[in-house]
Image (cartoon, rainbow over all chains, first blue to last red; front, side, top):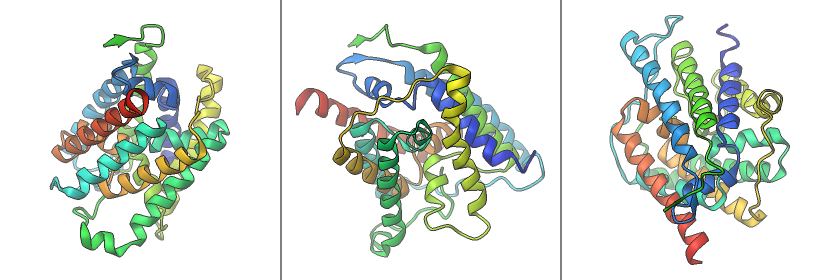
Length: 149
Length: 142
């Protein structure tokens, strides 16, 4: 069961993205277009996901341990700084340009979509850039040794 | 504001969202990790000994999900119409931005908000605002 977990989590995550409509950039952009014909569906995706996850994190927080007894690793960073806000703004612009955020972009490769693959390739290059450039870290030091997500 | 009632799908949106929440619940309760797509991929660049296999397995499940979703839900292929230059620019911005911010829609938007993290709330408000503004500019101004 534990061995199967990462694959199963990825599969379930992807099934949720597909069923909810998040894998379709046209639907995502229709949600982000407040001034157009607005499709509020994705607010329901967030509500459903957060509702279920909220209960799980309460349980995990109280236990402090996984079901198998391993420690729960929660993000240590608390500070709201320029790196967090600036990075999020850049991410939002990219999301708005194409209608893909990381999870749906990766899943869309499974539809054998070459455009999604190109987007994910560019995304990986961007991630490698942040990992490789020590200058960026000097300008905006990491606030947390543990990633938020 | 005009609501597009024809394309509005509250039931499948809520159900799909619940599955995403269940995936996050499974990972935190079984492995003690936060579910975040940008973290899953970003943690592989570069890969670290002992840390990469679970990430690769989760990403494999994510990529195979559409094959199963077609059978289960009849999910149609995505309508991705952006030009290659836009895809590259958007991908670079999403890659750089999510690594600087340590999270994306899943890590900050779902898990962070579910954990009541002020840091994730600030990130979510920022990327949502930037995305709304970008779509407004692209569709109604430029």
